[in-house]
Image (cartoon, rainbow, N blue to C red; front, side, top):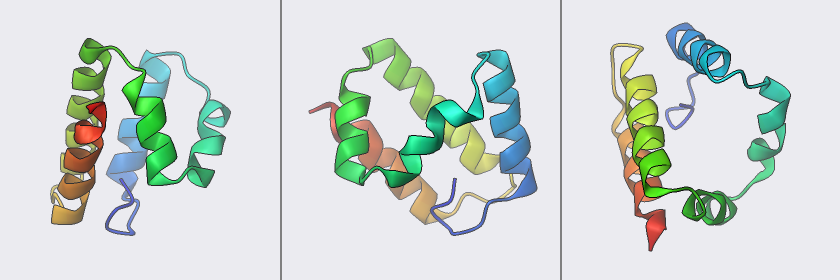
Length: 85
């Protein structure tokens, strides 16, 4: 996560593994850099409850993978998980 303005190599490796596991192409997510948080929330709301729970778990694991969970990362994950309302 880039909430701490640091994209750690462990986070990049984690993302690469997620993309490989789900057979995703990185270019499918290029537009996400241009989304505001409100737009991201709008997209997040359409996910099933199970998918949201799994996504939140992946976000937390990504935040943990560099050995330090920045409080800003957790704040964004928490805020995103509240986009369900």
